[in-house]
Image (tube, rainbow, N blue to C red; front, top):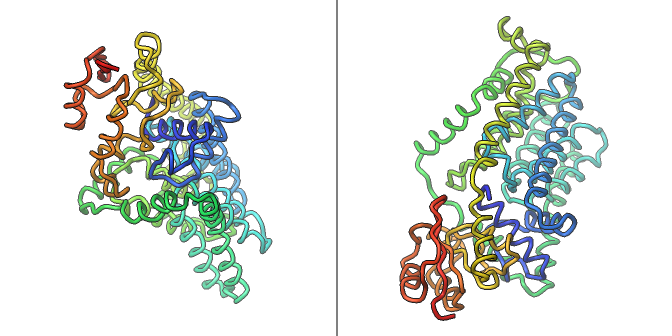
Length: 452
């Protein structure tokens, strides 16, 4: 288990494959896309966490390849194109949390990159509506994709206006593209309506969406952005150098600085508007930053002589190999060498307590349900949906009421953190359960029901 979001996708997808209904039997504050992508993967390849992470790596690799193809299609040489693709991979993996565990941003970035490639690699009028449908599919994975399509088509409108090419036909194509962007979402709405479960769908996609954002003060948000920039300072040096330096790329087909700058600004707005300081939100911004930062490696971009020598072919490849080795070492220390707490808990429950058919993971690792092929006693799989008051407000639920409903089912085993996050759980454990095992790594406690 690396992070809770990945665990939630796996648990819910597994339940979907068992016939459970999304948002009715199992739910989360995410659109349908990530759950059905995960469910399809598990259906084809089986319940493999390693395989799912490998699948995520392939998605990141494909996105990187599309960045490479985009750069070539707008007139760059192979060196700058390779740099953009490689920078995206380093961006998303050099700090282990961003790319090792699978998350929504990895998938919708792929659809966004594909839409941009379609727009810039063809001269056909059909590229606009096709790009609209593609990025609309990404919208099913996370709604923040609306910031991407707004930036992309605003750029097209601006450049058409500057070049005096903004004709009624072009405006009509852009309008059709916007309509087609909404078609995948409209079809999902229709599917839930026809199934008779539209109210559960509406509660997540409409009510929860408008309740999700929260206010955050200016200084903490600016410090958060600054921290992100400092973490990846070399890449941002490449980005701002490429944005501000004066140079001309022969064969240019678009105003790339305007495009990347506008797109980055909209992605930054997308990151800030929810008011949640979750680092993985920045993955959306990594796409336009990587696209432009690759220009730093173009021969047409003038750089100090010492920098030129540092990034020569011989030195550059040696530095690249060193960074890959360091990255792998960091990831090995962070994950491979660490104890697999969730798997140890699952093994103990199955082999010692034999209570896998009736467990509640409480505020501990919900991936245990997946590891034991166990049915969660609540549709709110992610612990924060019940224990976090902000998420209670977002979903318009009473967290204590949900907890009572779970405890009324009298699960045979309950796993909690060292100190339970709920007074209600603490009181129930004291009255009806006994402490069976205390795991000092993590740490967790497993309680068993006194009178099953």
